[in-house]
Amino acid sequence: MPSREGFQQDLFTMQTVNLADFMTPGVHILSGRERGTAIRNALRLEALERTGDAITVVIPKDVIALNSGFVLNLFGESIRRLGRAEFERLYCFDASPGVLEDIEGAKKRALDNLPLP
Image (tube, helix red, strand yellow):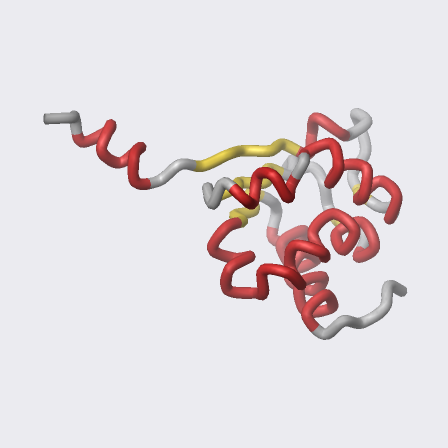
């Protein structure tokens, strides 16, 4: 019989992406539509989503804000395609409270199909 730990791993697989891998040291605000798109492509988010595994997105704690254009180009397509419930089931964000608010605002904007500012 498998150990309890092995059993839990079979039930729940999680992938982790760390935005620090795409940041310049000392940067505290992530912005830019092009940058969001470039990171989305580099991470191959659509392929990660197709696995059905949970995805943890780590955003360094020293990042104080995410520009809405950056977030929408990074996650907007996924939010619209998956819908809020499935996006939130699939994605978990490890970030500061202010950044989590920025992500929440972008989710609303994507679902409302509002244009970028």
